[in-house]
Image 1 (cartoon, rainbow, N blue to C red):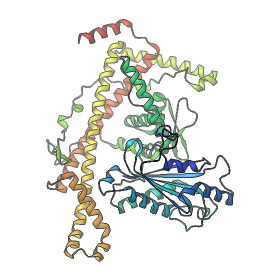
Image 2: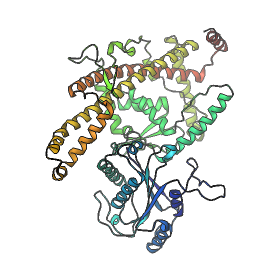
Image 3: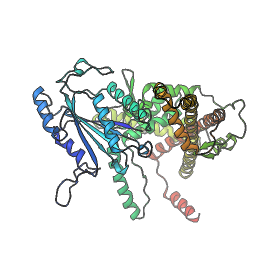
Image 4: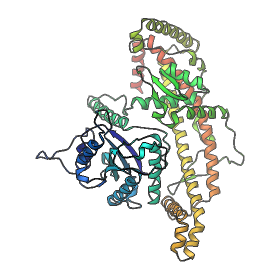
Length: 556
C-alpha cells in the first residue's frame, strides 16, 4: 500500500531540502553523513527533477520568487511543504515497480496536484530503517508563482492566484489521498483506503517513539548484563497510553456518562467537549489532546456508536439457526486452519469469581505530590487529602467484606485474572483475524466472478482494443482479483461463495460469544486492579509474606 505524509518546514535555508534529497543522513539524528575526507556522502541511487525551476538551482529561484512577491520573510512563516509518497515493498515484486517508474508517477502526481509551485521531485529506493521500499519526495516552495485553474476540492479564491501561499487543509489532504489511491490502482499496485485512519500517528510522535524505544533497549541491555529482568520491553508514548486506556474503558462502559466517569476516577483523564468534539486531558497536562489527533475511532461519534452497539448486544450468545456443533475449517494461505467451536473455547468455562462490582464506586487515590494543580492551590490540596482518606476507608471496608485483606492471596488472584484476561483477548483477536481474512476473500471472489464474463467476451473477440477501452476498469479489477487469489490458493480449486459465507456466520457467532466473555472478565480485572492500587497507597506488605512466597517459588 502507498501512504502519504506531509511535513511543513519553517527553515529559510532552501539548500537544506536539496541536501536531504541528494546526500545520506543519519536516520535518528537527521545529520549529514561525512566520508573520511569530511565531504557529504551521496545517496547510492536517486533521481532528482524540478518543476517550474531548475532542480539544482531550487534554493536561489525560490528566494528570487520570495523577494518578488515579498513573502516568506518572517521566522514563523512556512517556507516549504514536504510530501512523501511511500510505496509498498511488495510493489517491487509485483507489478515490478522501479525507481524510474516511481519518479515518473511522482512527477505526474506533483504536476496535477501542486500546479504553479516551484518543486523538487526525487525518488529514493532506500526505505527508512532499511525497509527497502521505494518512495518519492515532493518538496515545494510555499509561494505560488503562477495563476492556476481551480482544483476539485473546497478552496479559497486566493488559492488559485500567483503571489499567494500553499494552504494544506483537511480537504486538500483528502483530495491528495484520493488522487494517490487512484494513481496506485491505475498502475496495478497494492493499496488500501487512505481516507480513514483508525490510529493517527504524526511524524513527531513516530520520532519520539523511535528515540524512546532505543533508550529503553539500552537500559534493558544494561539490566540484563547485571542479571536483572527488565520490567518492560516496549516504549509507549503519552498518546499511545491514552489510546489503550480509552479502548480498555470502552469495553466496560455502558453509557457515555460511565465512560467519562471511569476515565476520570480510575485513570485521571478528563473528557472535555467543544463544538461537538471530544478531547482528553490527562493529569499533569494543561492542554487537552483532541480525539481526532488520536484517530477516527477515538472521536465522540465513533465512541458513542461503539457504546450503543455494545448496549444492544445480547447478554447471552444465541446459536444461529443452521449452525452445526462442529464448525468447518477456514482456509488461510492455501492451508486449512482449525476454527474453534464454542464448546472448545476455554473462556466459556471460566470459574465464576466473587462479585467485585462495588469496586466501581470506590474512587481512586490521587497522588498529591505529582498533582500540579494541588501545588498551586492549598484548597485543592486539602480536598485531595480528604478525598484520599474517604477512598482509603471505603477500600478497607470493601476488602474486609470480600475477604481480600490477605495481600499475598490478593496479588495471586490479580495475577491469575491478568493471565486469564490476556488469554481471552488473544483468542478474540485470533478470531477477528480469521473473520477479516474470510471477508477479504469473499470480496475477492465477488470481484473475480463479476469480471469473469467480461474477460471471456474479451478473449472471444480476439482482445480487440475497442472492447478493452470500453471495459478497462472491469477487466483490471478482474485481473487484480485473479492475481491475488492465485497467490492465496495456488493451484487449488477456488472455494464457493456459499462455503465462505457459512464460515463467516460461524466465526461471527464465535466472535460475539468471545466478546461477551471478554467484557465480563475485563470488568472483574479492572475492579480488582483498582482495589490493589488503592490498597498499595496506604497498606504495606509484610516482609514475612514475601519470604514465605519466595521459599515456595524456590521449592517449585
